[in-house]
Image (cartoon, rainbow, N blue to C red; front, side, top):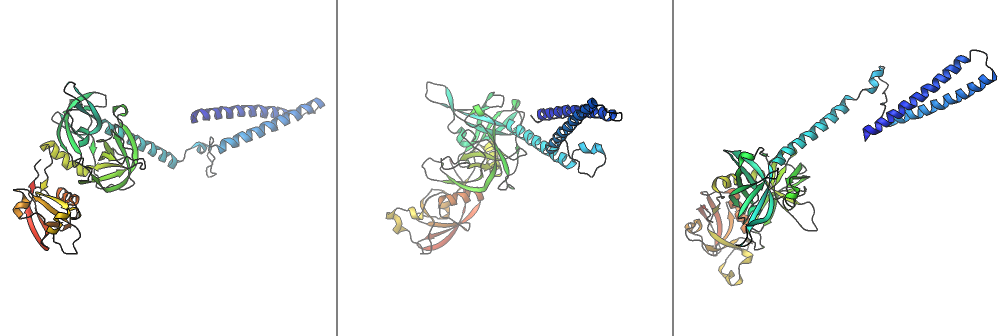
Length: 426
């Protein structure tokens, strides 16, 4: 569009110049003829030529002024005497333009490479015994590793949950079968294994540790299914270390807290398991969920890659995540049924804690001597007022075999006990 306008302007400018040159020559011829004696006819001719020359000059001045104003002809700053400098472009301006073009091209190149490593994940389920497995849902996944002829894809647990079969859709629309190596409900992560012979691109995993609110990010995935495969949406990091309570067992009560990255990059159904990346194409999060109510717009969440990688490694090698347990079932102090509250004696200053409802046989809790109606108030010096806080500390700060100290109250008296954490049995 600009080139076309410039061409028209230059053509118009050349036409004006030609007309001006013609008028000037006519004026010059008249001027030369004035050196001889003028007849009345010559005087009339001279007057007409003079008027034509003035008119042409005025039109030329107006057109040239317009071209200067519209920057078609650069205005000399008066510091250069060499006319060849008039058309020279300012070096700083040229450098900025080149840098912007180069940056845009680099970002586009990084996004293209990362997009090639984001695939579709299709959950196939059997509706009844008379039919074959059919597509029950689609999501996204990230190819994060390739070795020994195999490629590995990370996605969300809820994308492959209850699947009879799982397929991975490559960017060329080819579908290949996938094996679920492991899946973890609490972190909402799953790892798939596929044939690596057709995989040429592996995502670059970055770090979520040094992210800042306001950093630009791009979400890559398959919103609303494979029809819009490898869609990119741009936004910023809206918040870090957001704690989101989730219900993992379907009882509509939160039983786990997950730490996530908040972003306003559009995350829609089908984006789950896709990549949240920086402008240089490094994966810093795995898109997982969003707040989907009419009153909310642009609040999506991604699992930080630094938190995901250890889980991915366990799922890939062991098929599950080994988590420690104490071996008790508990309830918050304020949720103890009235008929049992007389069993609990606490000092007035104690306002919260977890009441032991049951102790599992052979568990670390039984071995340490914990009993029903003991009220746990601290774990390793950290206050405990809910099962969420207890699990969060256990699953984030400890591992199987660790020794921890619990503070609890029994018959109104404070006590402490040390116990060795055992592995949770599914």
